[in-house]
Length: 424
Ligand code: GLU
Image 1 (tube, rainbow, N blue to C red):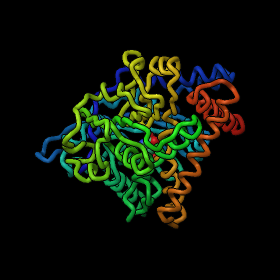
Image 2: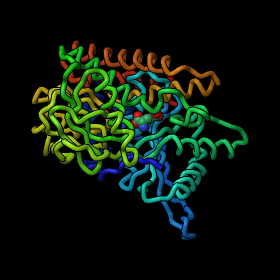
Image 3: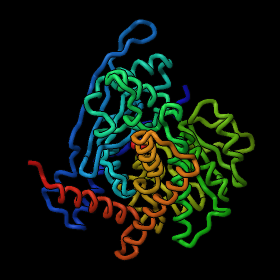
Image 4: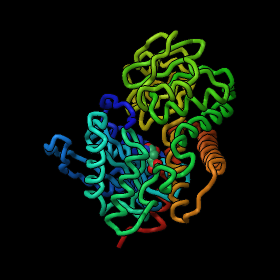
C-alpha cells in the first residue's frame, strides 16, 4: 500500500507549543481563568495497548491513542496518524489544533486526534488491516457520526478509513459511512476529498498573495513534503502560475531554479505515495536546506517543529504557508515575525481537508452526493471567507495572522461554552 514517508520526531514538545499559543491568546482577549484551565486540557484521553497477530504468527502489542480536546461546538473531528514517534503529547496538541481549526472555518465540530505508534511501511497490507480493525474495535465506544469522526492524517489513507468504517459497521449491524471521512468514493467518500487539503493550501496562497499585494503568477515556491498535502498543493500551485523550484520527501529534496518539472507526472512516477521519483537535472538538497531557499513562498507540508529557534533566522521566503500541522515552534514564529515574514498559520492554511471532511459527513448523513465541482466551489468559498475574516481582524488590531486566527477560534469556542453553560 502507498504510504506517506514517516519523518523523524518533532524536536519540541508540540503540546507545550499548543498550550503556549493558547495561553497567549487567552491572556490577550481576557478569557476567564477557569475556562482557560478547561481549554488548556483535553477533555478525554484514551490510550490502548492492543495485540496484533503478525503474518509469521507472532503477536505484537501496539499502543494507540484517541484524544478529544473540546466538544463545545459539536461532535469531535480529527485525523488518525500512524507513525513510529506518535506520543500522547503530540496527539493532544493535534487535537487542540483541530478545535481551533474547525472553529476558524466555522465548522460545527470540536477537535480530536488519534495515533498509533507504528511505522506503517514496515507492515504488510494484511498486518495493517488487522492493526486498523483491532484499533477500531478498541476505540469503538468513542467514535461515531454524532460523537467523533476520524479521518486520514500522516501514514493513513482512504483504505484505512474503509477498514475503520467496515469494522464499526460490522460491530453495529448496519453500514455507517458517516463514522469516518476520507473514505474511498464508492463507499461514501466525497469527490475532491483526496485533493482537499492541498487545494485549500492553493486557495489560501492565492488569497495571501492578493492580501499582501503580491502575485502568484511566476512566484517561486519551495514545498517541504511530497505526501498528500505537499504533492497536491505543489501541483495545483503550479497549475495556477507559481514556479515550484524545490520539493522534498522525508529523505531529502531537489532544487532547480528553473522549476523542478511537472509535479503531476512526478506524482505518477513516485515509487510510493509520499516519495519523490528520480528527477534528472535538479540539485539534491536536504530538508533543512529547502527551508532556507531564496524563494517567494515556503510551504512546510511535513511535520511539526520544522521552523525553530535554530533556523528561523535563515528562512528567506517572504511568505510561509503552513500546510503541515504545527510546523513552526513558538521561537521560530517570533523570529520570523521580527523578520517581517508573512505567515499564514496552519489552522487556516491546511483547513481544506477538514472542510471537505465536513462535506463528506454531510453527504453521508443525507445519502446525497455532490459533483466534484460543487465540492471545490464550496471549499473555495468557505476557506477564502475564513482567511478574510482572520485577515480583517488582524488589520484592526495590529496582530499577526496566527494571533487573529487564534483570537477568532478561541472566541468562538468560549462563546459556545458560555451559552451552553457548565453541566450540571
Ligand atoms: N488530518 C487532517 C487535519 O489535520 C484532516 C482532519 C479531518 O478531516 O477530520 O486537518
